[in-house]
Amino acid sequence: MRGIKYLLLIVVLFQFAGGTFAQEDWWKDKKYKSEETKKKYELCKRTFKDIASGFSSSSVSLISQYFNNEVFLDILGNEKGTYNPNQAEFMLSDFMDYFKVVSFKYLSSYHKNSYAFVLGKYYYNIGSGKRELKASISLKYRNEIWYVDQINLN
Image 1 (cartoon, one colour):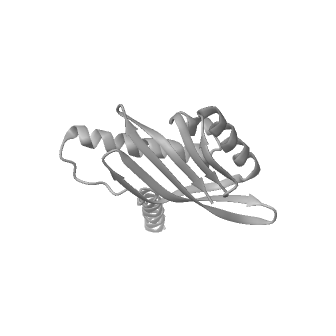
Image 2 (spheres, one colour; image 1 turned 120 degrees about the horizontal axis):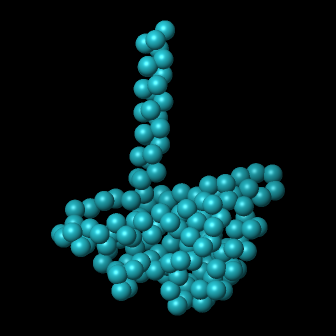
């Protein structure tokens, strides 16, 4: 009986570890030429993680902290254009109030020099079921900071 408990514990731990690892599949670490470059892309990854947390928790402030002077938004093809940070924050807040998030996850990413983007899914409940939108987010690197360049939710 004791052996079965340990076996179950090990199975649960592997499942948990597998789930945690799967969350990082969207980001492919590379070998970097210098420690400075490595830190630059670690900051990029952390920026994307903060943004994902913002979408997952419907906390626009976690996303808008990375807004620069202007942000391009394409929300459902209706709200499409370049906006100042206050307008973009309001639009995302309005979107998340209506399309209540169930979960948000990244599927893949690309990063090079001063540009990076991710592709993902925004899952939400509306009406009688769970639905999804494609999400893409791009960042630009300026003055040692990654800024949101575009957010597309369609």
